[in-house]
Image (tube, rainbow, N blue to C red):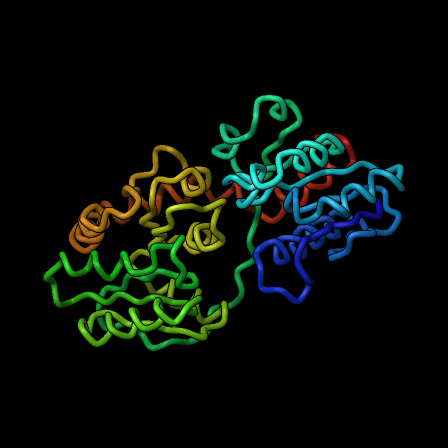
Length: 315
């Protein structure tokens, strides 16, 4: 089948939607289809189209539905799930009515989908390819990492405030990612000056960031809103325990019974989990075992097969 995979952002954008569009096209091509990621309001003739982000690709979805005979599918993004529909309810309703099926990335998204759309909503877990990590200096102390750009939704300084509650000298904490604004960058630099256990590494490429993750005793996701973070999938694949906020985006990937959750913004709870990792090897192994149970959900082969079944009408 010839398949359009439409993103609402330019193809050279670092946005997650564009990365996802390329990944979906790649998975469909693995299954024997001819899929192309694109950014356009006037997509070409195709047997099917997968549009990412209801509002950002509304014009492309409408054009395809009007001028094509193929089926339209919409892959709901984290922005869609977390209030995106409300920015233009009429256009959202109109666009979703055109779709054969809606796709979400994990079951925790389903309660956030309006009842009228539930019957045509499917779950397809994403997958992630792990590049070969680059060489980095071996940490001399047990390391915690928080990987992701420094921006408010990620609550990027919570790890730093958590380690202030841990007097142990033999630990290290590293934020890996660029600052989205000057204030967060200045705060990270100040943190590093005030506590030698803390480091900020900006400008890392993905293989380097993953090397830091792989060297971690545990990695931290402190977001207060998340559709489903690539870093959580990467940690699952690398078998690195995740200490994560108990938001829907994290529970959807890690499972409701995962033992590494803390409440959003609660540095005291995060500090307690970090202390347990430092002192209780059995706790760390339990978290790793829980990740092992989740790993098959995120396999490349599984996503490729399910996307192929989706566009073929067999899902």
